Length: 304
Image (cartoon, rainbow, N blue to C red; front, top):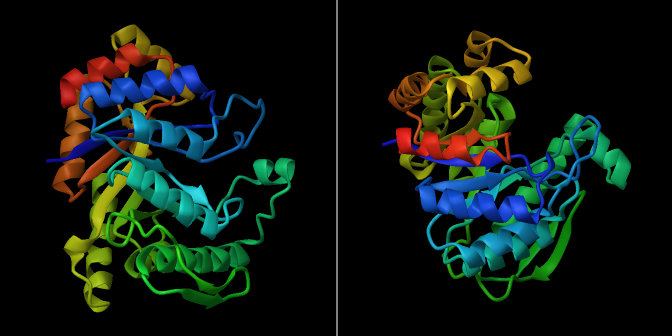
Protein backbone atom coordinates (compact mmCIF):
# COMPACT_ATOMS: atom_id res chain seq x y z
CA UNK A 1 0.00 0.00 0.00
CA UNK A 2 1.32 3.45 -0.93
CA UNK A 3 2.62 5.33 2.11
CA UNK A 4 1.71 9.02 2.24
CA UNK A 5 3.87 11.66 3.93
CA UNK A 6 3.86 15.45 4.03
CA UNK A 7 6.75 17.66 2.87
CA UNK A 8 7.03 21.37 3.61
CA UNK A 9 9.40 24.14 2.52
CA UNK A 10 11.27 25.23 5.63
CA UNK A 11 12.28 28.59 4.12
CA UNK A 12 8.76 29.52 3.13
CA UNK A 13 7.60 31.11 6.39
CA UNK A 14 8.33 28.29 8.82
CA UNK A 15 8.63 29.31 12.48
CA UNK A 16 8.16 27.52 15.79
CA UNK A 17 4.36 27.96 16.12
CA UNK A 18 3.77 26.70 12.58
CA UNK A 19 6.25 23.83 12.93
CA UNK A 20 4.83 22.62 16.22
CA UNK A 21 1.26 22.68 14.92
CA UNK A 22 2.30 20.88 11.73
CA UNK A 23 4.24 18.18 13.57
CA UNK A 24 1.39 17.42 15.95
CA UNK A 25 -1.18 17.32 13.16
CA UNK A 26 0.86 15.04 10.88
CA UNK A 27 1.47 12.68 13.78
CA UNK A 28 -2.19 12.66 14.85
CA UNK A 29 -3.71 12.34 11.36
CA UNK A 30 -1.81 9.17 10.47
CA UNK A 31 0.57 10.32 7.73
CA UNK A 32 3.68 8.13 7.63
CA UNK A 33 6.09 11.02 7.90
CA UNK A 34 6.94 14.71 7.80
CA UNK A 35 9.85 15.99 5.72
CA UNK A 36 11.21 19.47 5.08
CA UNK A 37 13.67 21.36 2.94
CA UNK A 38 16.96 22.76 4.23
CA UNK A 39 17.35 26.35 3.03
CA UNK A 40 18.18 29.75 4.47
CA UNK A 41 15.90 31.56 2.04
CA UNK A 42 13.88 31.08 -1.12
CA UNK A 43 15.62 31.41 -4.47
CA UNK A 44 13.79 34.70 -5.10
CA UNK A 45 12.81 37.52 -2.71
CA UNK A 46 11.17 38.23 -0.38
CA UNK A 47 12.92 36.45 2.46
CA UNK A 48 10.54 34.69 4.86
CA UNK A 49 10.90 32.93 8.20
CA UNK A 50 13.22 29.93 7.88
CA UNK A 51 13.44 27.71 10.95
CA UNK A 52 16.81 25.97 11.31
CA UNK A 53 16.64 22.38 10.04
CA UNK A 54 18.45 20.32 12.67
CA UNK A 55 17.02 22.18 15.66
CA UNK A 56 13.51 21.64 14.31
CA UNK A 57 14.15 17.94 13.66
CA UNK A 58 15.53 17.50 17.17
CA UNK A 59 12.32 18.96 18.58
CA UNK A 60 10.26 16.64 16.37
CA UNK A 61 12.29 13.60 17.44
CA UNK A 62 11.65 14.37 21.12
CA UNK A 63 7.96 15.21 20.72
CA UNK A 64 6.62 12.46 18.48
CA UNK A 65 6.44 8.69 18.74
CA UNK A 66 5.50 7.40 15.31
CA UNK A 67 6.26 9.45 12.20
CA UNK A 68 9.42 9.22 10.13
CA UNK A 69 11.06 12.52 9.27
CA UNK A 70 14.10 14.14 7.74
CA UNK A 71 15.55 16.67 5.31
CA UNK A 72 14.63 16.72 1.62
CA UNK A 73 17.52 17.31 1.33
CA UNK A 74 20.42 18.70 3.35
CA UNK A 75 23.27 19.96 1.12
CA UNK A 76 27.01 19.63 1.56
CA UNK A 77 27.41 23.13 0.12
CA UNK A 78 26.73 24.58 3.58
CA UNK A 79 26.66 21.46 5.82
CA UNK A 80 29.99 19.77 6.46
CA UNK A 81 29.57 15.97 6.18
CA UNK A 82 31.16 15.36 9.59
CA UNK A 83 28.63 17.65 11.27
CA UNK A 84 25.84 16.08 9.21
CA UNK A 85 26.83 12.55 10.25
CA UNK A 86 27.12 13.51 13.94
CA UNK A 87 23.79 15.34 14.04
CA UNK A 88 21.98 12.67 12.04
CA UNK A 89 23.21 9.88 14.30
CA UNK A 90 22.21 11.74 17.46
CA UNK A 91 18.76 12.75 16.18
CA UNK A 92 18.10 9.24 14.86
CA UNK A 93 18.95 7.80 18.27
CA UNK A 94 16.73 10.35 20.01
CA UNK A 95 13.79 9.30 17.80
CA UNK A 96 14.41 5.56 18.22
CA UNK A 97 15.39 5.15 14.58
CA UNK A 98 12.90 7.28 12.60
CA UNK A 99 15.21 9.67 10.72
CA UNK A 100 15.57 9.47 6.94
CA UNK A 101 18.75 11.33 5.97
CA UNK A 102 18.33 13.03 2.61
CA UNK A 103 21.65 14.23 1.16
CA UNK A 104 22.22 16.67 -1.69
CA UNK A 105 24.69 18.94 -3.47
CA UNK A 106 22.97 22.32 -3.06
CA UNK A 107 21.50 24.51 -5.80
CA UNK A 108 20.01 27.77 -4.44
CA UNK A 109 22.42 30.46 -5.68
CA UNK A 110 20.84 33.30 -3.69
CA UNK A 111 21.26 31.73 -0.25
CA UNK A 112 24.87 30.80 -0.95
CA UNK A 113 25.69 34.31 -2.11
CA UNK A 114 23.92 36.01 0.78
CA UNK A 115 25.36 33.85 3.54
CA UNK A 116 28.84 33.37 2.12
CA UNK A 117 28.84 29.70 1.13
CA UNK A 118 30.62 28.44 -1.98
CA UNK A 119 28.18 26.64 -4.27
CA UNK A 120 30.82 25.70 -6.90
CA UNK A 121 30.30 24.97 -10.59
CA UNK A 122 28.12 21.93 -11.34
CA UNK A 123 30.91 19.37 -11.92
CA UNK A 124 32.86 20.41 -8.83
CA UNK A 125 29.62 20.56 -6.83
CA UNK A 126 28.80 16.94 -7.68
CA UNK A 127 32.38 15.86 -7.00
CA UNK A 128 32.01 17.40 -3.55
CA UNK A 129 28.66 15.63 -3.14
CA UNK A 130 30.32 12.30 -3.91
CA UNK A 131 33.04 12.92 -1.33
CA UNK A 132 30.49 14.09 1.23
CA UNK A 133 28.43 10.94 0.83
CA UNK A 134 31.55 8.82 1.26
CA UNK A 135 32.39 10.63 4.49
CA UNK A 136 28.86 10.40 5.90
CA UNK A 137 28.29 6.75 5.05
CA UNK A 138 31.71 5.63 6.28
CA UNK A 139 31.36 7.49 9.57
CA UNK A 140 27.89 6.08 10.16
CA UNK A 141 28.60 2.53 9.04
CA UNK A 142 32.18 1.85 10.13
CA UNK A 143 32.96 0.70 13.67
CA UNK A 144 36.64 1.27 12.91
CA UNK A 145 38.38 4.66 12.60
CA UNK A 146 37.99 6.23 9.16
CA UNK A 147 40.76 7.84 7.12
CA UNK A 148 39.73 9.72 3.99
CA UNK A 149 41.81 11.93 1.73
CA UNK A 150 39.69 13.81 -0.80
CA UNK A 151 39.88 17.14 -2.53
CA UNK A 152 37.21 18.69 -0.33
CA UNK A 153 37.25 16.62 2.86
CA UNK A 154 39.97 14.86 4.84
CA UNK A 155 39.70 12.52 7.83
CA UNK A 156 42.45 10.87 9.83
CA UNK A 157 41.46 7.97 12.09
CA UNK A 158 38.06 9.58 12.75
CA UNK A 159 35.34 7.60 14.49
CA UNK A 160 31.80 8.61 15.31
CA UNK A 161 31.06 8.08 19.01
CA UNK A 162 28.73 7.04 20.42
CA UNK A 163 28.06 4.56 17.64
CA UNK A 164 24.57 4.81 16.10
CA UNK A 165 22.01 2.68 17.90
CA UNK A 166 20.57 1.63 14.56
CA UNK A 167 23.13 -0.59 12.79
CA UNK A 168 24.64 1.48 10.00
CA UNK A 169 22.85 4.62 11.15
CA UNK A 170 19.79 6.23 9.58
CA UNK A 171 18.45 5.41 6.13
CA UNK A 172 20.25 7.41 3.42
CA UNK A 173 18.01 9.05 0.81
CA UNK A 174 19.18 10.53 -2.48
CA UNK A 175 16.77 12.55 -4.58
CA UNK A 176 16.53 13.40 -8.25
CA UNK A 177 15.61 12.02 -11.67
CA UNK A 178 19.00 11.88 -13.37
CA UNK A 179 20.36 8.54 -14.53
CA UNK A 180 24.07 9.31 -14.86
CA UNK A 181 24.59 10.84 -11.43
CA UNK A 182 21.51 10.42 -9.25
CA UNK A 183 20.75 6.75 -9.86
CA UNK A 184 24.44 5.82 -9.76
CA UNK A 185 24.74 7.55 -6.36
CA UNK A 186 21.65 5.69 -5.15
CA UNK A 187 23.24 2.38 -6.11
CA UNK A 188 26.48 3.26 -4.30
CA UNK A 189 25.24 4.97 -1.16
CA UNK A 190 21.48 4.98 -0.58
CA UNK A 191 18.67 2.86 0.75
CA UNK A 192 15.99 5.16 -0.65
CA UNK A 193 15.58 6.83 -4.05
CA UNK A 194 13.40 9.93 -3.96
CA UNK A 195 12.22 10.89 -7.43
CA UNK A 196 10.74 14.32 -8.10
CA UNK A 197 7.36 15.10 -9.69
CA UNK A 198 7.17 12.29 -12.24
CA UNK A 199 4.15 10.99 -14.09
CA UNK A 200 3.49 7.26 -13.58
CA UNK A 201 4.93 6.11 -16.94
CA UNK A 202 8.08 8.19 -16.49
CA UNK A 203 8.53 6.90 -12.97
CA UNK A 204 8.09 3.30 -14.10
CA UNK A 205 10.85 3.69 -16.71
CA UNK A 206 13.36 5.12 -14.23
CA UNK A 207 12.30 2.59 -11.60
CA UNK A 208 13.04 -0.25 -14.01
CA UNK A 209 16.39 1.31 -14.86
CA UNK A 210 17.30 1.50 -11.17
CA UNK A 211 16.36 -2.18 -10.72
CA UNK A 212 18.78 -3.10 -13.49
CA UNK A 213 21.57 -0.93 -12.08
CA UNK A 214 21.15 -2.41 -8.61
CA UNK A 215 21.17 -5.93 -10.00
CA UNK A 216 24.32 -5.19 -11.99
CA UNK A 217 25.99 -3.90 -8.82
CA UNK A 218 25.05 -7.00 -6.86
CA UNK A 219 22.38 -5.27 -4.77
CA UNK A 220 18.83 -6.49 -4.37
CA UNK A 221 16.24 -4.11 -5.84
CA UNK A 222 14.31 -4.55 -2.61
CA UNK A 223 17.18 -2.92 -0.70
CA UNK A 224 16.16 0.54 -2.00
CA UNK A 225 12.82 2.08 -1.13
CA UNK A 226 11.16 4.03 -3.98
CA UNK A 227 9.65 7.37 -2.98
CA UNK A 228 8.67 10.61 -4.68
CA UNK A 229 8.39 14.24 -3.66
CA UNK A 230 5.79 16.11 -5.65
CA UNK A 231 3.55 19.15 -5.44
CA UNK A 232 0.11 18.84 -3.90
CA UNK A 233 -2.69 21.25 -4.75
CA UNK A 234 -5.77 20.34 -2.72
CA UNK A 235 -8.43 22.28 -0.86
CA UNK A 236 -10.94 21.51 1.85
CA UNK A 237 -13.67 22.72 -0.51
CA UNK A 238 -14.07 23.79 -4.14
CA UNK A 239 -13.43 27.47 -3.38
CA UNK A 240 -10.16 26.73 -1.59
CA UNK A 241 -9.01 24.44 -4.40
CA UNK A 242 -9.78 27.08 -7.04
CA UNK A 243 -7.86 29.68 -5.05
CA UNK A 244 -4.79 27.44 -4.79
CA UNK A 245 -4.91 26.62 -8.50
CA UNK A 246 -5.11 30.32 -9.29
CA UNK A 247 -2.17 31.11 -6.98
CA UNK A 248 -0.06 28.48 -8.74
CA UNK A 249 -0.31 30.39 -12.02
CA UNK A 250 -1.24 27.23 -13.91
CA UNK A 251 -4.39 25.36 -14.86
CA UNK A 252 -5.33 22.13 -13.10
CA UNK A 253 -4.40 20.13 -16.19
CA UNK A 254 -1.00 21.83 -16.38
CA UNK A 255 -0.31 21.06 -12.73
CA UNK A 256 -1.18 17.40 -13.21
CA UNK A 257 0.92 17.13 -16.38
CA UNK A 258 3.89 18.52 -14.45
CA UNK A 259 3.54 15.67 -11.97
CA UNK A 260 1.72 17.46 -9.16
CA UNK A 261 -1.00 15.62 -7.28
CA UNK A 262 -3.82 18.09 -7.75
CA UNK A 263 -7.57 18.39 -7.87
CA UNK A 264 -10.56 17.03 -6.03
CA UNK A 265 -10.34 14.15 -3.56
CA UNK A 266 -11.34 11.65 -6.24
CA UNK A 267 -8.71 13.07 -8.63
CA UNK A 268 -6.05 12.83 -5.93
CA UNK A 269 -6.99 9.21 -5.22
CA UNK A 270 -6.77 8.34 -8.91
CA UNK A 271 -3.32 9.92 -9.25
CA UNK A 272 -2.01 8.18 -6.13
CA UNK A 273 -3.37 4.83 -7.34
CA UNK A 274 -1.64 5.25 -10.71
CA UNK A 275 1.69 6.01 -9.04
CA UNK A 276 1.34 3.01 -6.75
CA UNK A 277 0.60 0.78 -9.74
CA UNK A 278 3.79 2.11 -11.38
CA UNK A 279 5.82 0.84 -8.42
CA UNK A 280 5.96 3.83 -6.07
CA UNK A 281 6.13 2.88 -2.39
CA UNK A 282 5.99 6.27 -0.65
CA UNK A 283 4.97 9.79 -1.68
CA UNK A 284 5.88 13.06 0.02
CA UNK A 285 3.18 15.60 -0.80
CA UNK A 286 4.61 19.12 -0.87
CA UNK A 287 2.27 21.22 1.27
CA UNK A 288 2.98 24.89 0.57
CA UNK A 289 0.08 26.35 2.59
CA UNK A 290 1.58 26.18 6.07
CA UNK A 291 -1.53 27.66 7.68
CA UNK A 292 -4.15 25.66 5.77
CA UNK A 293 -4.32 22.75 8.16
CA UNK A 294 -8.06 22.21 7.65
CA UNK A 295 -7.45 21.09 4.08
CA UNK A 296 -4.76 18.70 5.29
CA UNK A 297 -7.27 17.15 7.68
CA UNK A 298 -9.80 16.70 4.86
CA UNK A 299 -7.09 15.12 2.70
CA UNK A 300 -6.07 12.74 5.48
CA UNK A 301 -9.63 11.58 6.07
CA UNK A 302 -10.01 10.91 2.36
CA UNK A 303 -6.78 9.08 1.49
CA UNK A 304 -5.38 7.48 4.65
